[in-house]
Amino acid sequence: MILADTGFLQIGSQRLEYRFLGPQPGEAPTLVLLHEGLGSATMWGDFPEKLQKATGCGVFIYSREGYGQSSPAKLPRPLSFMHTEARETLPKILDAIGFQDGLLVGHSDGGSIATIYAGSHQDHRLRALVLMAPHFFVEDCTIKSIAEMRQAYDAGSDLRGKLARYHADVDATVRGWSDVWLKGDFKKWDLTEELGYIRVPILIVQGEDDHYGTVAQINAAERDCYCPVEVALLPATKHVPHREAPEKTLEVVSGFVNHVLRHEPAVV
Image (cartoon, rainbow, N blue to C red; front, side, top):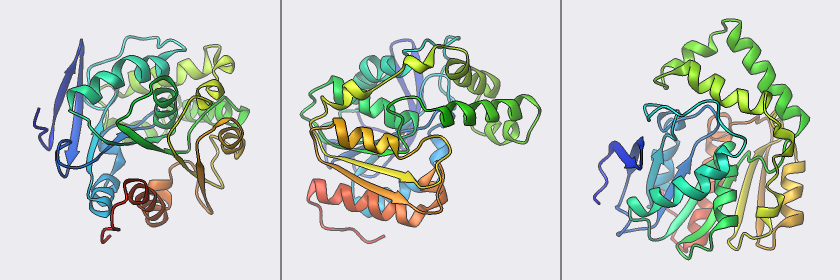
């Protein structure tokens, strides 16, 4: 298929909104961006455009079911919702867009989904992973920060108004995601086994002040992965490196992508 700049993919019963930038998958490598737990295709801001310019790759961004303008998700979400996304939906998306060569670039939950995919599929098309603030297991600080976000949201903070600009049903998005972390038995959730099966290089980008995860996540990847793991630990940065340290994040991510794909560095 020829990907338009914006549109929808029909993946089974799911109607998923997407954005696409740059050359088609048959013409250049493709970077597939996977958003965070409350993200969407549009919430990446201008990072995809800058990343496309810096690498020359095509950039495909989509909103998962229950996010953005994509079809609603069935609630409550099961504990396995990220595994289902990585093992069932993402492979169909990659095939539907004609993915031939490239990387997965995931932020937070998106990084976890990329990890599950690479640890579950020996996909010769996949050259590497970029994981920004990923979760490989559950930390107390993660649950604490989600609980504080949910309490503020339910109390009527301006977060609802901010997120409502991006999501068709903001209440379902926020509550559907946070409930599975806060009310489910999420302490059992663990991706360290998947880390051991990844066979492509990994770049982990994390803020030193990330309140949703600590360097223990990085340590787990360095301990359990047999593949090369590069780390960029960014000072004065919390959980969203591409918004809180945009220039440095673009520099390290595009540099890694260009190295992996052996591109000449593009002009930023």
